[in-house]
Length: 103
Length: 103
DNA sequence: AATACAATATCGTAATGCAATATAGTATGT
DNA sequence: ACATACTATATTGCATTACGATATTGTATT
Image 1: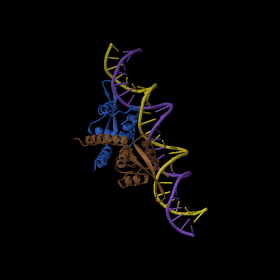
Image 2: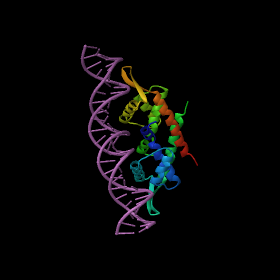
Image 3: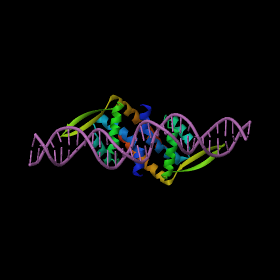
Image 4: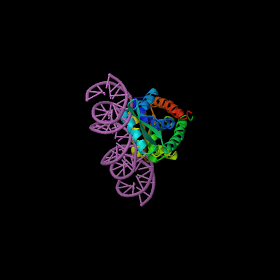
């Protein structure tokens, strides 16, 4: 499909997946990046971190900095607003995808 | 969800929907824009037309200009490559959405 | 104190997205 | 035949986002 088209089409999905994962358990950048890579999606840290910052700024995520074996990690979790947005996004995403499979 | 978040999350979906609709029948800007609006998504023409141009440039769409009652319309249809990309995108989109509904 | 390491942050540039404005082209009325 | 109106596309200037590369942070280990 072409690397560029892939990101062009799916970066929005990835943003929804941030909320999905951060709803289940705290996530941090490196780990989330690897998780994505395992599923075939690569995203630059120069893209990912600003997305986290923006989502925190918008009140969808909150962060907590933790020291794990001397390495500093910044864990993000959904706010209640983040969960609301996630629920709404899931419904809309499903509608849009279902439509793709009509007839 | 906030207008801006909505577009941020879903513009990629909309690009896939362009291929979906242009696979079924020729589409043109005004009509597609209204179709989106009916489904609750608004997209500026300053966004939409350059997307068409880019997809044509990438070989996913071809255009044909037609005169309908004195109005000039530019109809876009999928190329075979556009159809390939659509099929791949549908599968990936479905995977990503299904995952959102796991447990 | 120096080094190594995992992780986050930022920088400069390129590409996208947007609202607003301009342009195009023909049908219709006079 | 000319002016007007109408629908549609194209472009423009600015703001925001995306990206790869580089810098910074903070602690554990030596």
